[in-house]
Amino acid sequence: MTHPVPLPIQQTILLPGLAMVSLTFVVLIAMYRRRVAQMKRERIHPQSVATSAESAAKLTDSGPADNFRNLFELPVLFYFALTVCAVIGLDDIATLALAWAFVASRVLHSAIQCSYNKVMHRFRAYLLGAAILLALWVRVAIELIGG
Image (cartoon, rainbow, N blue to C red; front, side, top):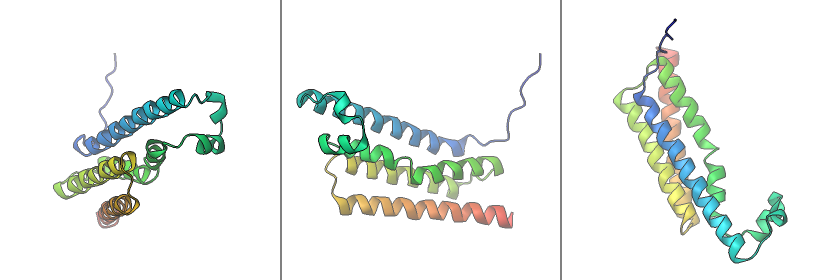
């Protein structure tokens, strides 16, 4: 029997990614609960919201659905950055701090969008997350080019 050779991946740097995956599932559950509740309350037949246009016209409680889509935009670059960090062993305190700060910014963004949804508050949280992600990628680039 052969034993698989462990990959040279630092697990610590992957924990913020696990936190983002958890956030995504929390938002998915919130989206499902609120959509089903609205559909039951307003007696909306599922087939009548089969397309995104029909959905937008009838399902007015769209905060969690909008946020769920947002969790597949900037976070895609975050997941890839974490993967690169894990492969090259970039898991120092500064990199971890940036990764966790990005997660915190996305939690804040999700909380705002799924609740009171004040655009400027949400925008600031989004911009903060984008700036943190950029700093993380600068760190990765320096390590890749200079390392």
